[in-house]
Length: 106
Image 1 (spheres, rainbow, N blue to C red):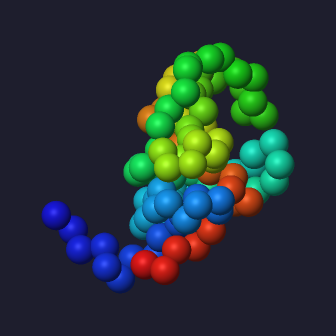
Image 2 (tube, rainbow, N blue to C red):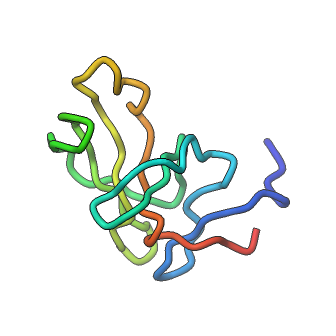
């Protein structure tokens, strides 16, 4: 198992629950409905909502909203399926709104 003691972390802005490591950021150049967002390869301590098709800026995707496992705050979504071939790289990855997370003490 990797040693993450020195790694920067991101937490739920509401309850400070650890949800992601900085090393899992794929891109910081994303947009959520309320501002900037980060694309992550992995999250932890979250739960997924129901899958639904959603029309996003980059086209139609099947997504599932993700929520903080501790407080239930909606933090972003997971890409389940991309219908456009150029968007397939997003499948299985997560979007978190920058305003929904805070840097942890890790």
